[in-house]
Length: 458
Image 1: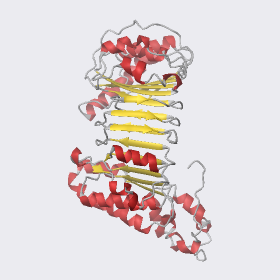
Image 2: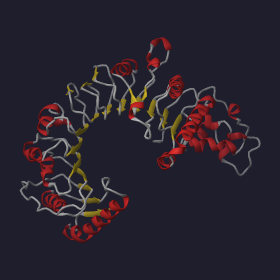
Image 3: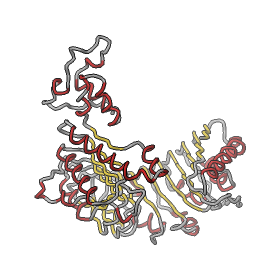
Image 4: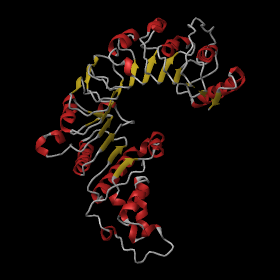
């Protein structure tokens, strides 16, 4: 909680919480604490856990109803259960929606710091009415952080829920002015709705939209916007995205089609996905990102062999310089036999780089042990201290990149080997590959790492 304290409304008095402490036992000192302290404590628990404290005594009956955060994020274990038992989906969905309705009806706090819905809910008239009712409740409590994630993981994608546009009608008198953070995941939202949020949420600092297919031509522009964090991800119908926000510090995009970055002088954290949308690496770095590369401090690039050819990677020798970059994360999804030394230009183009994370997502079993390429230019790097290799297996291509790092990064302090594999035919196959990778790291890599460098094998 960062040590911050929650403010309790002036009308919140002990007697309204069942706060008779005259019968509290001498040994129960915690129940003698002031209501605001107890609500602080309850706010550290999950919503279900805090509600269970109402059975402790009359002192606790209503305290949980004043917590300023309503996080209806059902346990992942409960959601995973629906994968294995599809017959439970409808009943579990009804149970979840009944739970949300019950809490909203009994909750007493006049303001909310957070309101979060996360559960697979398909599109239907009844469900749409429930979602609109929950949103109206949260906005009536002047909610600051609003998150809606209703991915119907078990239904058809065309049944994706839509944001209730009737709430955007000024005649409904729904006030969005308190919102500082808005996250919509697996919720269809239109260009007009995004424009509404930008115009009617003067405090909005964080806007995240994922898996929406109704947006086409989006403009996030305006000198008066206070937006700091923007994420437009996996919105495959998007044809163009224009961003001009002087206050923006972080941006995440997965479609580079029609991307235009204009007035973003504060942008220091950027995440981009290069997929098969006819965007070359040369165009990405020399044109689309040319306005901000020199100021970036963190860069996350996702490269897929579907959209990036080997020839393009060979052309990376002329990458523009990124003089302020401190952390670089590269997700590289390729066949298992592709050379990794081709990624070395990213290191050379970042002279101030301190941390480099490579997440190698290969999908060829078994990995071929091709002759590695040793044609990378050897230039000492004097700032890189941490290299994390996710998806390490131990073949010659892995060794080639590690040798490059060991030879050129002269102040390296730590190497982290994480043989995490997400691509495979079965759990047993992935587990076997990870065990082989750990064995290879201990037997072949460890003897090559100097004593001054800490080697961590996860």
